[in-house]
Image (cartoon, rainbow over all chains, first blue to last red; front, side, top):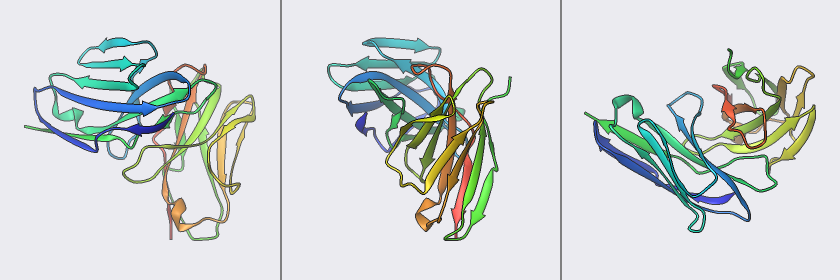
Length: 110
Length: 112
């Protein structure tokens, strides 16, 4: 996976919804991952998409469109603890590595 | 069930020195990957070890080398340190190639 683009920063209010977009270019797509990383901590796995469609996990959902090279992470009912960086990562066919975007810093305000 | 553990947490070195970072994978995982994360950037892949062999390597110079032991733990070695090597070094483990990688808290390396 290369050329992974996501917005640098987003701000939202507690209780609201935020959608983080990720676009990518790849020679042979083999999965897209979303990670959450709080400052000074390890990235923690949130979701995995390999087929088109929506994957829902509680307050977090992730969507994938392989034909458009596009994914989004939807965070609902935002809480203060959701303030973090959100990383989009792609794996190519035949690759073992993850290629990461630069991350989107989400700030949740009261 | 211990997750991925890395040591040391922080390290300060000077230019030209050598450093060794250590990683123990999550229980049940046999594959270890190393990433470098500069401030404000996403992690960049250094290499991956499986069955004690380097299986894939990213765009890093030969100054970066590694090793995996029979118990699946791993080391990252960096020689001839440069100021630009200052970063957070993350270790990630997994059990199958398509499974999510689980990250440790990282080693913060500062080069003076």
